[in-house]
Length: 218
Ligand code: AMP
Image (cartoon, rainbow, N blue to C red; front, side):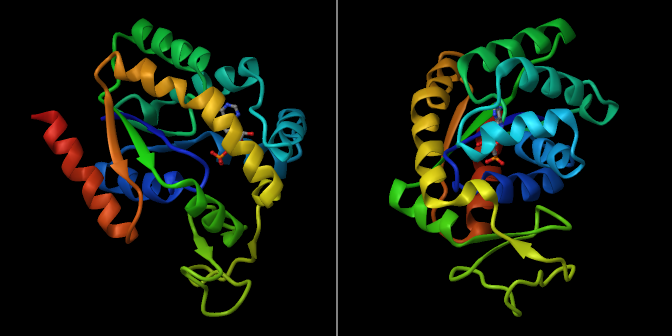
């Protein structure tokens, strides 16, 4: 399957993407993780991306689209993929369509994870991520680790993302509404959008998505 995951920051895109990718046996491609990997390896791209990310803005299309293309051309993405955080504006969506068209393939679904705005702020303010594996995500009140600051799964150090401060989250939400939300209409016109409520236990949300994808398939 070829799936795009859309939703505001804190909608649980990363959490759901990790689980869905495993169940559907497709690679999870997270743009944010690709940028963060570049930041920790101190590449030139990482330096550039960090300045935009820390301000809550989108990294320029030119760099982002080139990075997404490069990743999608890797052999493991040939049989399907779950794109988390790309596209994030209409020109990226058009670039993705062009790429898929060249390869003669199509998206199967665009999953739109919905969550109320007050909930987003609470989720992000308490979010803590493992330095060793970004799919290990905790929350200081909703899913606290057994030992503060330490990942239950691998013992890695837990940290708060630089762009998870309340001020940056508000900016990221504004960017989401103005730049990313329009892609929902764009994909709606292609009949690809599946809207899922991202509230409730994580397992239930995954189940909801899998059911909706099955229905969508039929
Ligand atoms: P995420 O981990 O998906 O929340 O992404 C973190 C940050 O990375 C975003 O706030 C943007 O600054 C940047 N980013 C991720 N995906 C994209 C994209 N498709 N286009 C531009 N910037 C992006």
